[in-house]
Amino acid sequence: QTPHPYQQLLVPHAATPTPASTLAVEAQAAAINAELLARRQENVLLLLALLEDEPVGINDFYVRYHTVQLLTVLLQSCAFKLQDAILSSRGVVRLMDMLAEREIIRNEALVLLVALTHSNEEVQKIAAFEGAFDRVFHIIKEEGGADGG
Image (cartoon, rainbow, N blue to C red; front, side):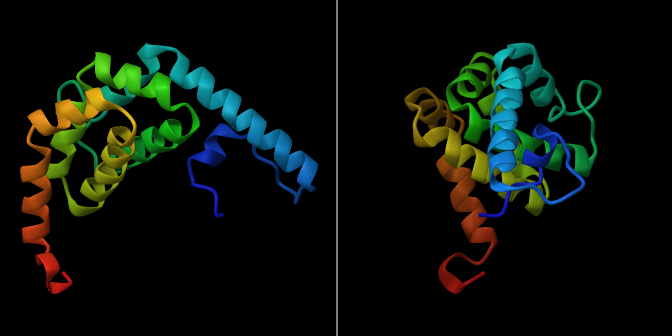
């Protein structure tokens, strides 16, 4: 499996190829770094704030795109802590707002929302209340629906 680009941020960089035992150590280091980042709610709140509109957030495509990708990787590593932080900060609402962004960011936000709602009933309820179904159906219609768009 190809590692996600942001997993490289969580692992100390090595310039030379490494044996399997070193890869296991790097994977453990990545898991520890992800845990440390998601452990403090302030860190997740800072990431979510980057998704806000100005003046709070940064209205930059790359910042938003990579922030959503980083949140997705963190969700894979430490789902419960990230879900708790997102739930306590109205982060689901902000992620739902990301569905109105450019196509690339919208697609990354969809991946993150699907992963978030997969195992958490509270996130499912908030997403449904915020009109997730309407927004997804609008995206399907916009993209050509079952016509292969």
